[in-house]
Image 1 (cartoon, helix red, strand yellow):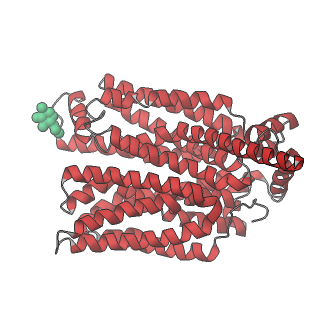
Image 2 (cartoon, rainbow, N blue to C red):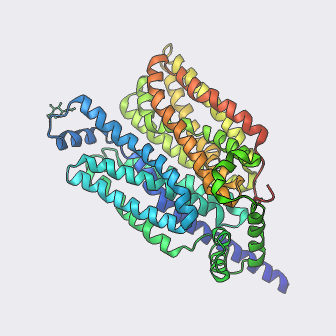
Image 3 (cartoon, protein in one colour):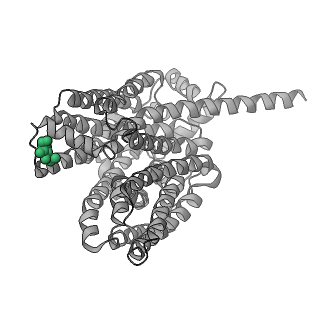
Length: 470
Ligand SMILES: *[C@@H]1O[C@H](CO)[C@@H](O)[C@H](O)[C@H]1NC(C)=O
C-alpha cells in the first residue's frame, strides 16, 4: 500500500503541475492575444464615433471621399504591418530566441498602444495609422513567438490543449473588442476605449521577464546545461525526467543536422518532406480564410439580407461568442481525439454550412424567413471553426516541422495565408455586390474543398508524437 500512496501522490503532483503549466501558458496567451483580438475588432462597432473623430480632427469639413480614404488606411494598415512582421519573425524568434523575440515585440506593442491613445487625445489621426502599423508588425512576431512557446514548452501529452490556448484567448478578446466598442460600453468614449488596452500591454511586457526560454530552443543553440535544466523544470515540473526529455529533443535536432542554415528558405521547397508540410499547412490555413470575412463584414451581410441593424450588431457578437465557446470545447478534447479526427470532419461540415448560407441568402429573396436560418448557419460556422478548424490549422505547421525550420515554415505559411486573406477580404465585397452571395462559393467553398481533399490524403496524425517519430 505504501507504493500505492506514492503513486497517487505522484499523479496528484502531475495534475497540479499540469494545471499550473496551463495557467502560465494561458497568461502568456492572454498577454499576446488580448491586444491582438482587441485591435482586430475594436474599429467595427464604433464606426460612427470614429467618423466624427476624423471629421473633427481634419477641421470639420471632411468629405465622404476623404473619409473613405482615411478609414481604408486605418483598417488595412493592419495587414500591411502584419505581413512585414512575418518576415521579421525568423530574425527575432530564431536568432534572439522566443523569449527576447517576445520581449521586444511586446515592448513595441505597448508603445503602439500609447500612440493610438495619444492620437485620440491629441486629435492626430496619423498617429493611429502609425500606431496600428507598429502594433501589427510586432503582433505578428509576438503571436508566432507565442505559438512556439505553446508548442515547445509543454510535455507532449498536453501539447494540443496548450496550443489551443492561443485560439481560445484570441476568440475571447474578439468578443471583448466587439462588445467594448458598442454604445452601451465604451463606444462613445474613444479615449477610454483606446486606453483600455494599455494596462494589458504593460502586463505583457512584465510577464515575459518571469518566463525562461523554451528548453527546445536552448538545446538547439547549445546553451549551458544548468540553464536548460532550469527551463525544463519550470515547464515540466520539479520532478520531470530531465535526461529523457533532453534525449527526445536531441533526437529531434540531430534528425535534421545535415543542411546549412543560409539556404534554409530554398530547403522549404527543395526538401520533399518540408515541401509537403508547406503544402499541407497552406491548405489547412485555406479553411481559415472565410472566417475573417465574417468577422470583418458580418454586420454588413446581415443587413443586406434585410436583418434589422440592431439585431445585426448582436448577431455579429453572437458569432464571436460561438467562436469562443467552440475553442474552449476544442481545447479540452484535442489531445484525446487527435488532430485528424477533429480537423477533417469539421472542415467538411464548415464547407457545407457555407453552401447552406449561400442557399439561404438566395432563398431569402423568395421567403424572408430564410434570413434567420442564414444567421444561424454562420453562427454555427464560427462555432465549428473554433472547435476544430482554426487552432489546429494554425499550429499544424509547427507540429510537422523540425525545430530548425520551424519559424521559417511558420513565416512561409502565414505570409502565403495573409496574402490569401487580403486578396479575399478585398475582393469579396465587389464580388458580393456583383453576383451576390454566390461570391462565397467561388472565393471560399471551391478553393477550400480542393485544399481539403489534399489534406485528407496527406496529413499524418501528430497527437502525442514527437517530430522525429512523425
Ligand atoms: C463633417 O462635419 C461637417 C460639419 O458638422 C458636416 O457638414 C460634414 O457632413 C461632415 N462630414 C462627414 C463626411 O460626415
